[in-house]
Image (tube, rainbow, N blue to C red; front, side, top):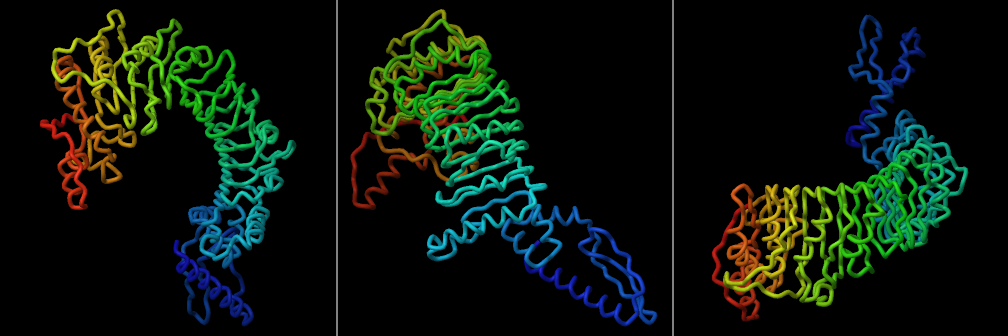
Length: 521
């Protein structure tokens, strides 16, 4: 409902009220049926044999409150300023999203000078809400603002999201008994303060902490029986200890921490990255089985991997989904050295006997590797006796012409007896996982263009295509679908890039490759 139409509606109501008062003073109206809770009333009265009809629909207060709740916050607040009825529903407005945008701060010049006044406005809004029916509060203000925890006492709040502010909860507030989702981003809060809040959050199901720099030790009590999802990123933690009995999904990215999830951990989904841990994949395969014995889905990010992945006896007995991301930074030649052996990833497959889906993503920028021979006379290594009987789907993103990567792919084709689909994406386009193809072959891409590549990466992509044609395609069983996602014939075309460079006065010599273009997507 637009503000103009709402103002007209409120004006019509005022006119009708004035008319009724005038008629009552003249003794014309002797009675009027009053409908409890109606925002608009339809009534017929008579005056001198004439009937006055009001055709506006009758709606209950609950319906009008629902309409009010669907308005954007600023429009809802404005409506409350021009209607007593909407003022009552405003005090029960379910989702308070208080940001610089919704408060109009970003439209005012030098608003930081008057920051305290705007903070008072936030406090005023919170104080004037009854708390009954308030389901969600999202607050994103400058870090100078300290969230008034006392205002939450006795509320029915279910979702609290705080960004860039201080949050200092103390024990006994009783503000979080109905809280099911808590998201703190760049919030100043200590270990003890968070512990006070969690100790009363018996209904909490989802906890999301990011960039909370005052916390060192995250301790989750066993009283959080409903907690199923924990996401921690970019905090300066040294340890995460969880006794929540039903925690099933954990996502962590940050510095190396000690994980303590209990001997009977029920965590089934884990997405993990340690920023400062070299050879992280090796750490995971040798240490993680005892920490998360019931794991079913695992996503690993490794920035620095200098040693090959070892064979281990311990098994991920329930793991059916595995993603490995080698996120070597562009230009970091030391992250993945020339001798890194992709074939050693067979040890990860061996450690996952019921694995169904395997995804490997390799960021090739800055990585060195030995090139597979340009002819078919090269003898590729094999690893007999390593069978992967449950593996059905494999995707390699950033497939390259490294000999060991070609060997890994051939090994999977020869030893994954249940394999149904294998996808080889020559370009490491992680954002394109849902769109099979490039902008030259599909209209599904949201960006309208393909992942940008430097010249040497385009050359490597063409070498990857040749490696597939010479070594891999002939080994694909008839019952397995091979999907090759090649460089885009438009965005990754070397001749077109040369033409653009010549137009700009730059001529860079490059290797001209004679290739056929295949599209198997």
